[in-house]
Image (cartoon, rainbow, N blue to C red; front, side):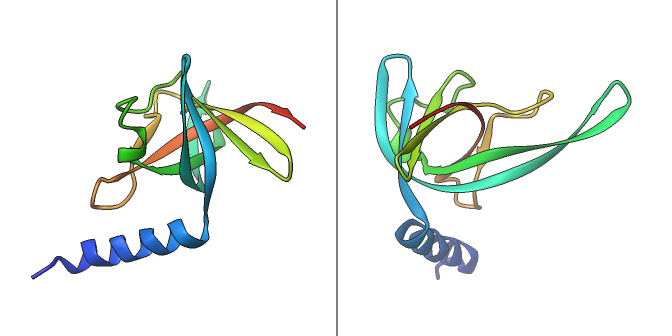
Amino acid sequence: MPDLLQTGAAWLHARLSATASHPVTYRRGGQEVVVSATVGRTPFRIIEDGVSLRVDTRDFLIDATALAIFGLPDRADRIDETINGVTTTYEVYAPAGEPEWRWSGPDRTRFRIHTQRISEQA
């Protein structure tokens, strides 16, 4: 009997991929691949010099198999996203020692990659 949570997660992922994903270019060094990504965000709360700060990252949910040529996401990797003719480049990032990525969902087939915007051009 299939696991109900895994079945539900697979159904949700298929729906998000069909309706909420769009192509982005994932780059590492001189290699790049166009993949389908769903965009999200993660709020981080960090403490710096006794002050609590909130930092939001732009997250890209990408199938792990789509990034197989790279292995795991790395801090120096870049993602280019074009919306309405404007290309924004994001760098894989997480604040204050947090991990740059985590698994999205219980099936461990998608990366949730945290990024920060580093440039934008029309």
